[in-house]
Length: 315
Length: 281
View (cartoon, each protein chain N blue to C red):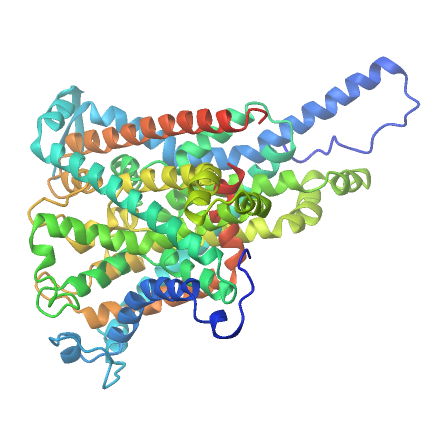
């Protein structure tokens, strides 16, 4: 498909009119074919390992799956997987926990990250090392951060054991503990994004605001925040979608406990599939989680587009 | 930048520097605890009240991680998987990014939006079907069980980043190469690719980091000891009743330091990748 080079040197300009158009058409068609040839391998890999499994998963979620010694077998279409899931108290709790976790961590990270960015933007010396420092938690393996916080929270020899004994032993404090670990790891990421947004705001706007006699607080609400809105929107979008798929941190730090109080939707799906070997209900949980994420991202995109459209009518 | 010039002691002692210091401590203190604990003896790791400095310093945790546990093997597995996936992502991503950025491909925009959707899709949704498929293919506990899914999940972001860079370079060199009779592949390799090097670094570092830190798929598909990657290895150290924190942190330091260095060396690429969405809108 790629081999013959039809995009040979163009014909001399002396050619008569009509065939020239068809020649350009030919080049265009060949380029389009080349484009498909270049795009196809990537699309095939992506489709084979993401889109196809998702479609397969939707089918599995409507099937009765039997696990036996010899393997998996499917028997008959059923909606029972979903009705099992929707009635299950475990699912209700996981949905509530994941939502609460997402809302609290994302809000805290946005507020703290904006605060950090506002401070660091005024830093005159040592900005480079500071940016480097902020990148370290981003590159950290989540499992490592989970183990580290597990050690800090440890009930017999942890760093915080004197202040807050047995943090991971109670549902409420275990939830807070997970959130703190997440906020520590992800706030630097939000800071970097907001900092990039801040730098984009023209300095004259701040100067004008100062000339108009607006104080720092007023400038923040009237100038900085409105102009940061698109940046913050993107940061919220990334974070919400990521937080909703929460798995690594509770899997290692609390193993969903005490009891199942810190079990996220992804963990519930994983445990149903690989611990209980209930692939039907397990895929139903996973598929419904994906559906929620999909709907959320569509809503976000819509709201975001509408907002940006309102602020910059010519864009 | 908007800082007024300060003189004398006010230049160093002011609230900006004070709060910046607090931010640095916020990031650094847990990291300090991770690194120092990896050099503590077993007794001092478990001492209450905690020991703030690792005295005496010992490297026995490192010896245990690489001797009693096969952490070296996990590192090798992670290196193989991450390198293969990153290479595949870059090769396929450059081809697709070039085509979507500069060639008249039909259906470009729906394709780009679909890619964006896939890149934020929760991985838990593909775990069950991929597990069943790989089980039938006999791929469970193998390198390809991770290389291909990692390639597929990281390609969309790489294509987006690379496409942006391809859009930004001038058309003229490409055309002159064409006039000189160079084929499309040769034009791409020798003329176009060198101009998007920063984009390739960004896509490469992001993919490598994502592969190095990925946990859910590695845990689901490659649980056998010989095929565990670093995160799975660290999560499964020890037994049900004891958590060997010294060993875990020694392994963690070994796993985290190379990636931290990589990220710091390519700092500019990483920041441009992180902020690509935020700034462009």
